[in-house]
Amino acid sequence: MSRSTGFIRTLAFAGLPFSLMTFTQTIEAQGFPDKPLRMVVPFPPGGAADIVARHFATRLAETIGQPVVVDNRGGAGGNIGADNVARSPADGYNLLFASSSVLSINPHLGGKAPFDVLKAFTPIVLVGHAPNVLAVHPSVPAKTVRDLIALAKKRPDALAYASNGIGTLSHLTGELFAQGAGVKLLHVPYKGAAPATIDTVAGNVSVLFAAYPSVASQVRAGRLRALAVTSAQRIAIAKELPTVAEAGIPGFESSQWWGLYGPAGLPSAIVETINKAANRALATEEFRKALVLEGAAPAGGTPAALAAYHRADYDKWGRVIAAAGVKEN
Image (cartoon, rainbow, N blue to C red; front, side, top):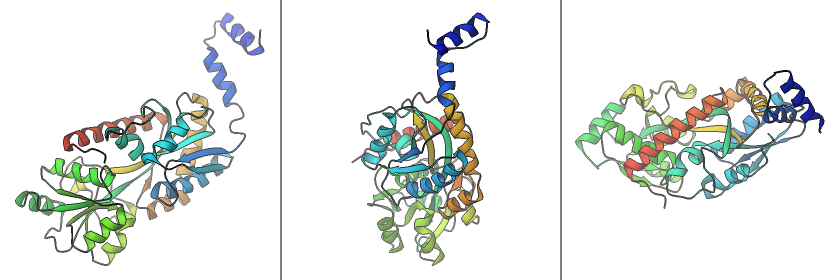
């Protein structure tokens, strides 16, 4: 009989509630972490997710006491990197820096992921979120969201909006806007934020939903007019912009978000250790300032809060995609 089994039997004999799983998880968590952690970013270097992940990894390393190595594994819309973590040991040393595009949107677009997004991962903490900006070409006679809605109702199908591509957050934000406002907008997909912004600045399309860093310089130069942000709250870097919810569609929210996950079955004691360190990292002034520059905001909270947030977001985009009939190319 092993020492651990004997210890469990002693506890059981004493009438104490104790299970082998609880005991095993407690032992596994002791001394954690004692080596570097690997955090998979399921996108290539240089994008918003990668930038935020690297800032977060730096602060998390300081609060958890071990290096946090960013491992970029792009491909298949983020599914390759996510699957790598789903198949990794649930030991706390293999983490996923997931985005809403991977966990909330992709599953509804018809593609076959090798995992179930609601079962394959253990939620740890909501890292942060970043909205889109609703902007129009200066020739559009709309100074507010209500003006734009009125114009769209007056001229059905006459207003075209640019997005980063079919099935992207900018595309689905436009669909959510149209559904919420009861209007029709013509969707014009591009291969990324840069060409979408360029064509809107040129006046070839009228409306644009894009991340703040993509449009900030154009708005400052007067080549685009920003009407609102799509988040639930105003953003720190552009507090003058109302939210879409404030400006015309109550309850409207559309944000890219990032969450930290482990593989399914990650021991609760390890989840708690990482969650506490992550919350301390998210609360640092350095991390907050880094996210403000990206038009984003840190989040934080419990694993249960992330699980609930993810599920609500997953369900919302499922409804929007089904109503709009969006399918992946």
